[in-house]
Length: 358
Image 1 (cartoon, rainbow, N blue to C red):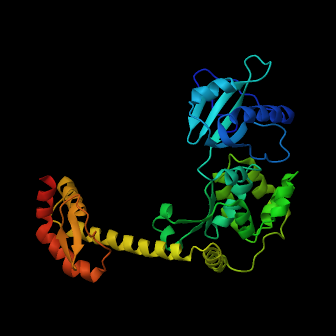
Image 2 (cartoon, rainbow, N blue to C red; image 1 turned 180 degrees about the horizontal axis):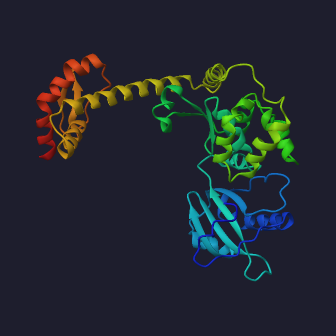
Image 3 (cartoon, rainbow, N blue to C red; image 1 turned 90 degrees about the horizontal axis):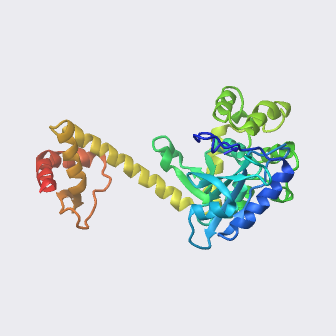
């Protein structure tokens, strides 16, 4: 949180930025304490060329015992803590400094994702930059790993379009065309970080140019490393990321390659089938709403009753007894909906409502 987690406290806490040597000493001390509580404890590598640090980030997983946040705060010597999602920030007094504190952010990782989350949060906004250009080609990188976005779903239900490919760091880097050995050696300058990222076979500079530049920087205005990459570094390296293949063709080619590489073709196809059925069902219910001679609350209650009780058996709609396992209403094509379902609904909606109220 950049050392700002306690800014809104009624009584301000004097959180100080940490010089590199002090940062390392305090980080290692905190890790040692946290290792008594968690089986997995690590701190993501910081971005190079930082003069100081606003906070200390530690990622944890695999609890070793039962404990409360207060137990942890007491062991860390924290005077205050605040929770935000999976991250708990602690305000801890600096050694031999009266009324001066540093911020420790302890982030609980998702089950089985410790190694990936350490890398995903390493080198500042490195993976934020990579995520921005792979996104233009139909992929998403987040704290759960690398995903492909199913195009057929993305346009109407973007929250449901992700298909996870892998959460294994070396598989992710390998597929993106990133030099794993170079990453293992580490980076000493931001220039090295940018060169490594833009060597990806996914990188194309047109993702960051013209109208997109202002939009992207606007979204990441609070991320100086991303702004530096887009506004300063890229304009000085004009030959990097020039790709002749049009973006749509590249997207289709890479997605096809991804689902084959990670053995996800069946899952991808099933997601498309499920989505088409979902759209058919949505359209069916829109038509049902239109044929019911009701409005407002009465219409809502009738639809609720039909959704709870309407089933499909032996090629026809029926009303079931609520709570008893049965054949749910499948996705039906327009002809069957128009010729069979809608006339049946017009005749039986009152029966459904009466059963629901009984």
